[in-house]
Length: 86
Image 1 (cartoon, rainbow, N blue to C red):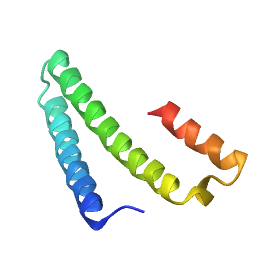
Image 2 (tube, rainbow, N blue to C red):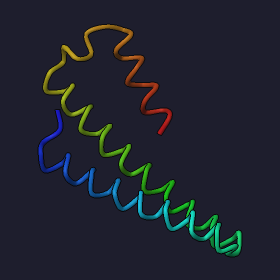
Image 3 (cartoon, one colour):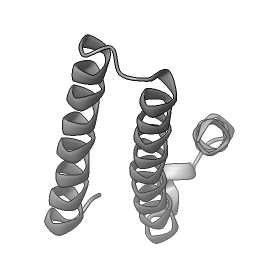
Image 4 (cartoon, rainbow, N blue to C red):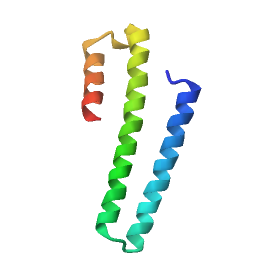
């Protein structure tokens, strides 16, 4: 379970990412250089990866505290798949 503070932090990061994606849309409309747009897309990808890592870390810490969340082979497989996709 996420703490209220961690939840707010992740929401703040996602709102910042939302602003970045809106900026990328404007760049496309303004016919900006593809390299600039690709650079911004790489920044968004890195930012979303960081949010994913933080959320995964919180999830895994909760599972360490409450091992029943990994009480089946399927649950363990789900966690492994999540980590591998990040």
